[in-house]
Amino acid sequence: MAGSGGGFWVSLAAGGIAGVCVDLILFPLDTIKTRLQSPQGFKKAGGFRGIYAGVPSAAIGSFPNAAAFFATYEYMKYALHSDSSQYLAPVTHMVAASFGEVVACLIRVPSEVVKQRAQVSPSSSTFQVLSNTLYQEGIRGLYRGYKSTVLREIPFSLVQFPIWESLKDLWSWKQGHVVDSWQSAVCGAFAGGFAAAVTTPLDVAKTRIMLAKAGSSNAKGNVLSALYEVWKKNGVSGLFAGVIPRMTAISLGGFIFLGTYDKARSLLL
Image 1 (spheres, rainbow, N blue to C red):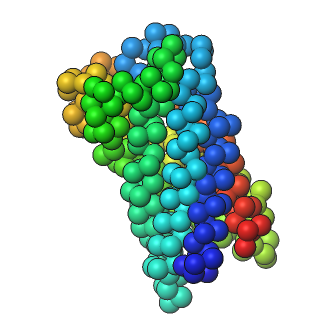
Image 2: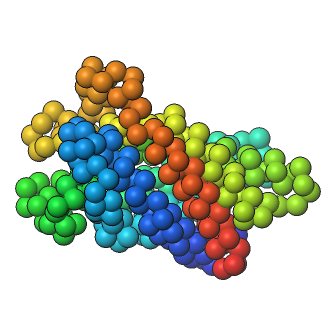
């Protein structure tokens, strides 16, 4: 049981392993997406140069971030589970995923702020970006965009996790036994790609807020005003900047992340 002590540690370890795998494999695509969304434009943000700028921040943050998400997700699923209400399963998955995101973002946001700033200034090292952020804005600077990240991640998880769980259930039912890890990975790719497409505007807003110069209007972290500003300057295409690399990365990410998670979990259990 995920709620038991053993299950909790298994979820923690499996989630961490999955997070590291996906973040490091897909890092170049993430850099391209960030640069496409940055206010100075793709070329000035570095184009295709220094595609691994900011990777130390992702490497350090990905294990605890993914571990925190899955440990919370599995615990909440266990706590909310009721045999009498199978039809409420999607709601359980939505609530569990939302709690998981709120907890994981406490680790993810500082790592993401440093990573994205390093991605759009490849001449600065990750450590320089971190020390500049702390010097200019203090700890609050590392949590710039916490609200916008949570506002992006919760709708994303509300779409992704119920679809992933439903596709797995449907496939299991069709074949008469529980899905294998590779089948779980395929379901994860579909769920992730779809969720990535519909939440791209929120991702654009989050990127603009994290990259905004201290003191500018976007630095205040207002998601609606960031979305409005993008829409005014660049229209609908601006709101969906980077949608292709984002969908590609997250479909691949869903495949690797959720497949690795299920595989690691079954091996550890």
